[in-house]
Length: 370
Ligand code: HEM
Image 1 (tube, rainbow, N blue to C red):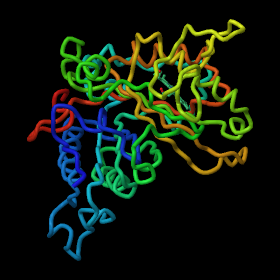
Image 2: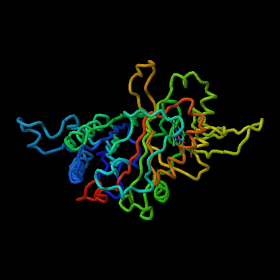
Image 3: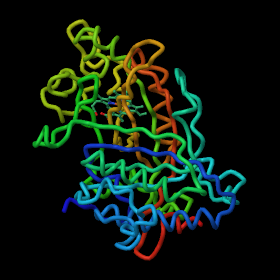
Image 4: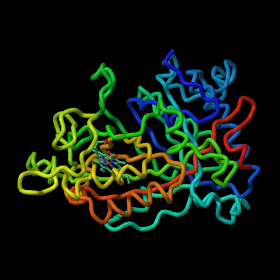
């Protein structure tokens, strides 16, 4: 039935193989009491558990009573679950003075600093609550965001949303590494989600990490990164490959043959120059093999930038990790300062969320925190 469970040790949608589409939603709470937030998360738990199994919200009578708005908005009626996952987290602002939870904010979850080159626009930033919805069908994903927003009425409002896509698995049945809008395979160097020990080391917060309510959860960073596609499309293939330090066609590291060959960072050409340039994205992001995070990015396209007539398109960069300071921040400080890719990209949106551990049946999202 192409369904992932909602309940479990970890939330689905983190180490779950990427589905075809993304619908990301950031919410702000209008509620002033923690009890109201708890009531919302309980409603969302029930709704998410049924939507992930492809069931309608509400029941027969609440969906057929001609005198009431139907409990479910209806556009996913009769559709299979399409591997939908709904992953919940709370942002730094959730720990401000409103709900009395400031002391529970984990040290591994600091505010993101302003990075060099950031051109963040408020309409793509922040949020008290982040919900990553992914599914193999965009209508199924949209339905989930819409119905969560509807259930939140009076307690929380949408702050921003962004849809994302990649090639569908129907278009590439072999399920190779998807390509981003720059035409390069994106995800090759990711840690192996089937390696439980590595996931513990890189992705899942461990009991000894400090904030016990986050154990088995993960910290998410979202960056809406616009690509200057018109400029990229005028740059030479050689320049493009030097930018990533990989071949466009095969995805192999420069100087290597196969996509999954290791990066040879010490190789030099006849002129004594590094084969993988010192400012190549792959080299810098590799962090000498010492710092990793799990990327789960999607492409986005949001029509035209009417000021310039250029495409507003790029990468919805989403990553998961055990410690934002030691992983995303450490890596992005270096990329922001040195990456050749910066000639072609601009970070325009940013948010981070502490994604709870999985919910046990009978429990609710966030029940370990409040
Ligand atoms: C590797 C694209 C932003 C972290 C790569 C690769 C591509 C790529 C094509 C090589 C293939 C692969 O290993 O997946 C992009 C694009 C970006 C972007 C187009 C922006 C629009 C970022 C950001 C970070 C990041 C913001 C983290 C702060 C990484 C990591 C690797 C990687 C960790 C793997 C390095 C390794 O081999 O160990 N990226 N990336 N990327 N990128 Fe990015």
